[in-house]
Image 1 (cartoon, helix red, strand yellow):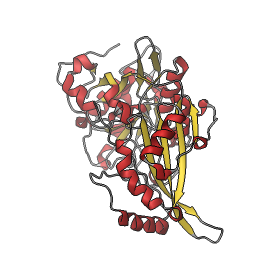
Image 2: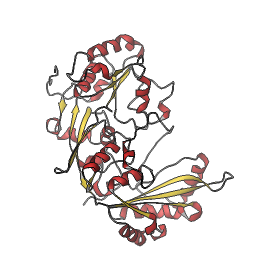
Image 3: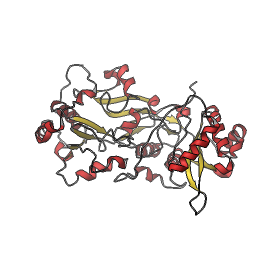
Image 4: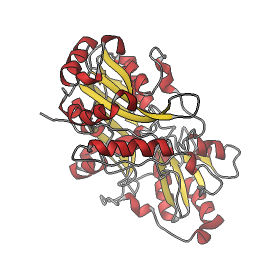
Length: 412
């Protein structure tokens, strides 16, 4: 290998984002960039087989395979000059060094689930460093840990953990096609966060490539940088190669449920009370409220229904008793609940029917399925009851969906 570790001077990866006029990049820059890549050979995988340019027949399919939002899959969407579907660390290092040298911006894509297409679009000449081939997962039950490469999806992470154990899991998101690299870089919240915090609260090591091509782990990068990459955003400080997760204990069976109530069934009062109940429940309980527009009849009349979606690290009898004491208005019954394994609960949260084989966690879309605009915000005080009436009215008018989640948790 020809890589050397330059002096210990860490450049924030934004150094790579050199904005130069599109017209000056042109063919010359991309040709020189591609030639530069060949200077860093790998004995097992030549980088040439990982390069896709618009002249390749597979370019378009590789580009859209990890675009989650159809808003950024149009003819007007800026396209990369090349996609480097890296297969090993040396490919990542070569891409970083060559893009930096030739003034091309790098967009680093793990799963492509960012709402605004930040991992695969740009207003300046750019290349995509696609991580989907670097997706190995090594679960060590004895050590209660797992090394996860950035190209792995959350579904693959959950599946790999469950293949080794039924008494450990990991707190992360509900969408199985989200890439681990970007999810953990942004913090990573999910349905076990009230018990175990964010994903990054359970990450104990990482490996990244810096803007000068060095590979660092937690010890060599130092605690400040290790703190920053856990929530500081994907590609802000380097290209994350892999994360070391600390697995968390889960019972052999957990309980899930999904109850829907409409405006006509008094859902406004339920949601209003949910705001004060959800954060005070035992931390083993996660209770989400998800409003959506529903048809009342075949004549086009509509209402709003709110799905109260729950997850409990324990048996159904216990969670029914808990909620009937603290939130009796919801009316949760034993027949509404399903006791499943932890990995089966991840399938439930992915909106698949109970009983769906867990292999669905390994499925990946081949092109974007939805066209959407996603926004989020936080509130420090409960939303007044009368405001929900206005929200329901607006939802029916525009027929959009939104979610309410108890994003807070209590650490003891």
